[in-house]
Amino acid sequence: MATAEDQLLLPRLPELFETSKQLLDEVEVATEPTGSRMIQEKVFKGLDLLKKAAEMLSQLDLFSRNEDLEEIASTDLKYLMVPAFQGVLTMKQVNPSKRLDHLQWAREHFLNYLTQCQCYQVAEFELPNAKNNSTDNTASSSMAYPNLVAMASQRQAKIERYRQKKELEHRLSALKSAVEGGQADDECVREYYLLHLRRWIGISLEEIESIDQEIKILREKDSITEASTSHSPRQDRPPMKPFVLTRNVAQAKVFGAGYPSLASMTVNDWYDQHRKYGALPDQGIAKTPTAELKRSTQQQEDQEQKEEDEDDEQTLHRARKWDDWKDTHPRGYGNRQNMG
Image (cartoon, rainbow, N blue to C red; front, top):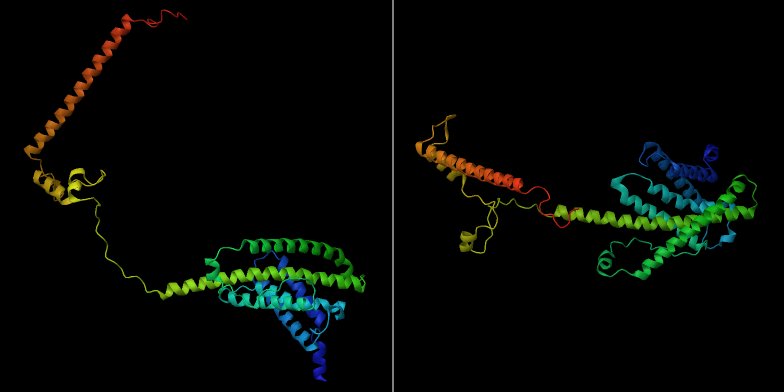
């Protein structure tokens, strides 16, 4: 008796499906970050409900590959979308350390959904590979030239899927109010769920392509990290002494290093020269310069003063000659032919 009561308290398959679908819709339209606590709680709850729904479908043996699509009841067609819902919610999980596992699980769910749809001939499409072989083809694809025909066909397939997706969404919006309101007949209900199945076929194909690309990036990242950690650290080398590149020693002595920034003396030479003249401070007090240093300084100052005086005399002489010329040659003196 207790077992029968427990079975009555368990949620039924339609309740599990509708609740999980509602959670998926809320996650898809949410404005909060995917990693927020509220979104992740909905993701985990939805995955748990979908897992129970998948187990219940397996126990009821609702679908069999020995039957055709026409033999499935119209109200039961929607339960074929359970693996697709599981794949989308698995992709929404946020855990960087388990990202590769989540991608592989989501790919398995999408592939399971596509396999069921192909078995029942819901739509015509090419089933992706069962395993992601991006790592096996990395070396060959990098060495070979890109297949332009394959790239063009993939682009055309994406364009066709996008066109079909927009058309399906338009037809679904027209049938949604009648089906959800319970006013549609069995034919409209069947068409409504078949359109949903075809729409999720396109979504699953796009998600598998995205998953394969992300798995390839993650595996390459892991291989690079392992390679960098396996190499031993480089030994510290002693610093190299600076040197000047010249053709030979003789050319360096004649022409120099080729640039004016080469020092003319070392610090020790400069120190010895100033110490010879007594120009270095002694315990904070500068020594009195010697007579030879005073004489050379005075001669340098006299020479500079003489050059300045000569420059001043030449400038004054040129100014006087210019004034005399202006006195004897008024403005417009040379303009005699054209008096304008």
